[in-house]
Every structure is written in structure tokens, then in C-alpha cells.
Length: 389
Image (cartoon, rainbow, N blue to C red; front, side, top):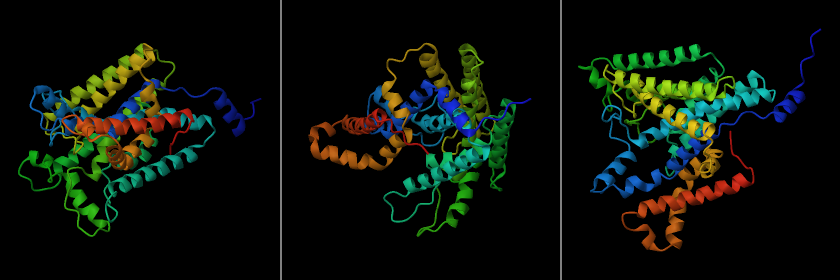
């Protein structure tokens, strides 16, 4: 005779008695990315914009977006170009842990489905709100990282818990299909290279139609980033989801998890580089399929390194400042986007002018602002206040 199904209250008590696994390296990774993002790279790009020495020029390059192509010296990249891929990748890594917790609390698939799509809509609109700050009307742009995450988030939810084969085939299918669209459209170009030039690409041409459907006092005339970037960027999040499922698998030993992550990182980087020679240049602003894999290899490698250092070797003495941010990432992001100008202005009002002048003035300005934001998050951490959607 079968046992009766447990009640929802029994499921909740069981889930509370055995809390879901938490990945410390993921919290640290998230905290690092948010600190860099909220501080605008600690002001290093501004401080080195006129630098003459080799170090200053290198730092300026690493903390700035390249003009167009993101591939340098075959396998090189600008650190600042990796912030958004890391942000989106981390969202994917966290999903298996988040939705496992919700399932253990007794939430039905329908409840989780509604939560995922509600969250997606909130992220899209929050991105539009941030794009509209200090404007006199709504700026209906969907290129902000939150909007890009939101546009792909609901679809990504449908792949949570699916087999590796299914996820792999979806990811490859999306990238190849998107590449084909970029090669075919718009029609009439004399060379394939023109399809990847600024203002001429397929996603940018789509935005000239799509974004002009929204009410605005001025017509949309073009932008290097495009709404349709979310399609290949969805695969960036999918790579995170796949890595998250590997790390969540308790039956795999740490060594096997690391081998899978490093293998994935190397393959993604190698295929991304190879693809860049087959009429698919590595362009971050277009989020080309080669860029998806190229950047994916780097962000997977960073996760593997942090997992080895923190979760395997247990070298944790240094992680606390990043964990504080990693547990409240949305708060740090919004503080950096909404409150940074006011905070810097207040600092300049109350502190000596000498702090903000000279070569290192921008670094001091950005560092002091992000320290204030971190103290706010530290207070929230001590009060166990975590803002999530």
C-alpha cells in the first residue's frame, strides 16, 4: 500500500530542516562583478584616459569598451567587456539553486512559471526605467543589462532541469540560427563583412523599425547595441544554467566538476575564436555568436577558478566583502545606477577638494562612493535584509 503524499506544510518543514546547497564561490563572483559595475571600474578608465605610460594605457584599455571589435591578439579581451557577460552568466548559474529551493518549498510548476515570467517583466521594465533617468520622457530602449536578462529569463526557465543534451542542442540551434539571420539580412550588401559593421547589422536594422513603434518625441535613429542582442545573450545565460546544474550535482566529486567546467571553458573559447575566422567576427556590441562563445569561455573559466579556490581549497579568509555584495546584488546595482551622482556630489561638498583633483581624483571619487554603498549593504547583511524579486 502506497504512502500518502506529503502535505505542503510537511514539504515546507522538510525543506527548512535541510536548506538547499549554497555556492559560496557564486556569491563571491556575483559580488566582484557588482562592485566593478557599481563603481564604474573604480574610475580607472577616467583616471588613465590621458595616460602616457605603458601601464596607464593598459589599464585604460582593460577598463574601457573597445570601439567595435572585442577580439585582440587572438585570445585577448578587455576586462570591462566581460562585465555584462559575467552578470548574465551568473543569473543562469543561480537558477538551478533558486528553483530547486522553490520546488522543495512545495511550489508547483505553474507557480514557478508565473514567478519566472513576472520577474522577467519586472527586469525589462526596470531596465527601461534606468534608461529613462534624467530624461523628460520614457526612453523605450531594451539594451540595459536588466532588460536583456529579462527578455531571455522566462525562456531560460523552461530549460531548468532539462537534460544536458537538450540544453546543448537549444544553445547551438539559437546561435547558428541567429548567425544565419545576420548573414542573410539585410539583403543587398556587397560583402559579408558589411553585415557586421556598425549601423548595418541585422539587429540594428530591426531596431530602426521596432523602437520607432514606441511613443517618442524624436525618432529612433540607431544605436550600437540592439534589442535582439538578448537572443544570443540568452545562450550566455544558458551556459550559466548548465554550469549551475553541474555544480549542484552532489553525486559528482569536486574534481569531476572542475574538469567539466575547464573543458567547457576551453572548448567555448576555442570554438569562438575559430568561428571568428568564418564570417562571424567577435563583436560584443552586437553580441555575435562568436562573442557569445568567446566571452563564455572566459566567464566559465573565472567561475571554475573561484570554485577551486573557495569551495574546493577552502581559502575563504578574503571573501567576506564580496559575499556582502553578492547576497544583495540588485541593491548594489541600483545604488550605482540611481544614487552615484548624488553620493559623489555630497562627498565633494563635505570633503576637501584636494581629494578629487589630480590623476587619481576619479579613482578616489568612485572608491569612496562604492565604500558608502558597501556599508549600506553591510548594514542590510547584519539585519538579514536581502532584496530579491
